[in-house]
Amino acid sequence: MRELGLMRDLLSYNHVLGLYASDGRYKDAVATFDEMLKSLIKPDDSTFKSLGIILLKCGVPKNAIEKLELIRKEDTERGLQAWTSTLSSVIDMDDDVTDDDV
Image (cartoon, rainbow, N blue to C red; front, side, top):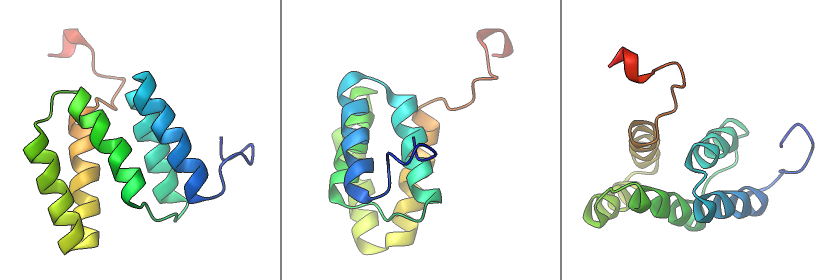
């Protein structure tokens, strides 16, 4: 979407993340979040609210998400790494892995 010039700012990214989260398109949401970070657009509370909804819908306990938020508020860089790692772990971003590989 960025290539098309549709997403240039934080508000655009947050809107798309929210839509993906509410529609159950979790891989698309995480890919959009990654694109956002690569574009050097800094996420805000709204960004993490949408990502938190995704984690909740994927079965991550609310207290674990609250801990991610606490880490982010104490140390922005470490918190961002924690969120990215958690999202990658929960949302299988590797399409090369199949049931036969397990």
